[in-house]
Length: 524
Ligand code: PEP
Ligand code: MG
Image 1 (cartoon, protein in one colour):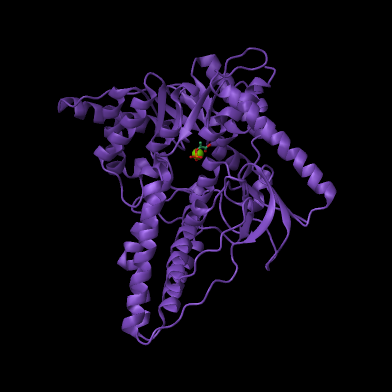
Image 2: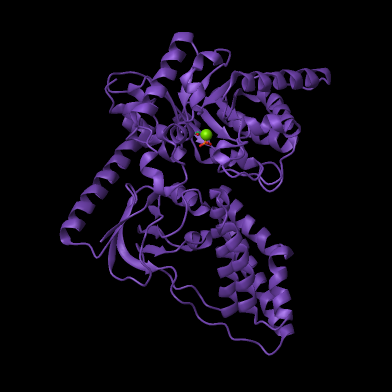
């Protein structure tokens, strides 16, 4: 039986099934409320201790996720309701579970992918403390197992030994979750949104995280076909590594620039600058976490990336909050956030916040080869207004004697109005095609909705025709055009993108080698 889902981290896994949701050991209730409270305090402390030990051994983003969990556990606002119910007679485990479940339900009900993805973090915290309460030590999955269930906790992922393979198959889950990000960076195959019927399953399964699916109780013929696909995938990956250190070039000898996309400044730590042509997209909305970052925090983050890149270009995008990326204290509640106040629209509506980012960028510009681009541009007026703010802030900094530089200012081409009438944007220093949004707007198929994923196709002739038109316009007017949507790193889309005239792609770091290998196979 094969069940379809959404690939969240590419690869193949064949192995025994391991049920993530199997029942746990029970908590033994104490004599009174005071002891119950002490038990909960002790369990929270124990969970924090375990996480702190994991932080010691972790690096970069992983440590960041764990520290986020510790901060949540230390937050009285989270544990307060549980202690209150213990006071009114509930045992510690029931009180903690109820308090966390109600918090989780709030996140799960959100229509925004970002908040739904954070529900997994809360479930992780809930289970860490329940485990500490019941002294239940986690039963380890057998080596190479396929972990399946509703969702998986980030700490569970980190504690699992993936050295002998294995994979993750989830009923819920999200490609935008922290675990999905970890799985991609560690190369662990993962599929989400699988309609697996409830109930335990046994035996061996086949996880196809390239196309997105799982096969239970496979027949010998299915196993044979699966192994062939897996071995082709492994061959492609192995062969791709040899391309990593070379400049990208097609079969016909056409040079293609390949840059990388990053979200956090620390992402550059894992990338050899020699393997890419620069940063084609730094998404800055992830710097805008729980609180809005001040000018100094932003300046340091941008400077760090610019210094890493040396002479190579670094394209930093001004904050693209809204849509599927809400920022507390900045974005607004909307019924249709993808068509609402997001990207440059929000920045122009909240100039106080936008000006802080502009000053940080102007100051950072002296430390490298910076380019700045605006997201979600729909009209030339938005570009002019944003450019005018850069000029104003530059003059203000210069008057104060602060070192600064005006970087080239370009635009994302991701709203169909721009792709259809690019001539109105001939003032922009460069174009970067955001194929994720351009595709969802052209096809009227939300990028985060599995039910319409089949419509969200960058290779649809309507999308490709627009991309080709933008590339042709850029060539005619001498405006550099690149593409920084996920399609740029997708080997299946790369031939069509190059045929559409693109010669500059920006891809996720994990896709760099495969993208270069795919380019080498194209005949243009
Ligand atoms: C895009 O839309 O293709 C893009 C690169 O921007 P984001 O995915 O951040 O919206
Ligand atoms: Mg976009």
